[in-house]
Length: 155
Image 1 (cartoon, helix red, strand yellow):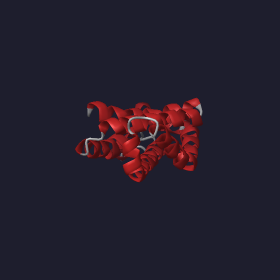
Image 2: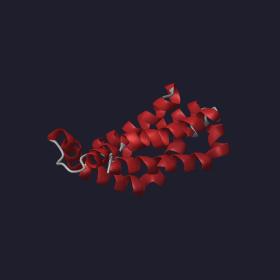
Image 3: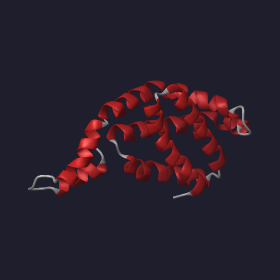
């Protein structure tokens, strides 16, 4: 369950939630099928998506990075998709930003790999757009946009 909803429930100790406080629950329930389906497809296709992205990067100036660090790129991109899948299932974009994006941004900046990371995740977005329904791709790529933005401009 997402943090906003959980906080509302915890703060309501001894009383019923108001209509405004119930709104996140209604949205959570209404979007569940899409989020669950997106999670399931992402779980099944993550490896294929990452490998397709790395193949795309081999055609760019980042070829050397992939040749030298391909297994690390694959590991990191797979982990990113796992974190996105969890955030989608829990409907928790705030948690994704706080718990993953900030951490990944710091590591990427320390290694001076922002440009290759941006291109890698843009390639992943292309793979996702080619694989998922428009609704699923929009959901996943929204999270990737946040990550790319953090690499590009910081938070």
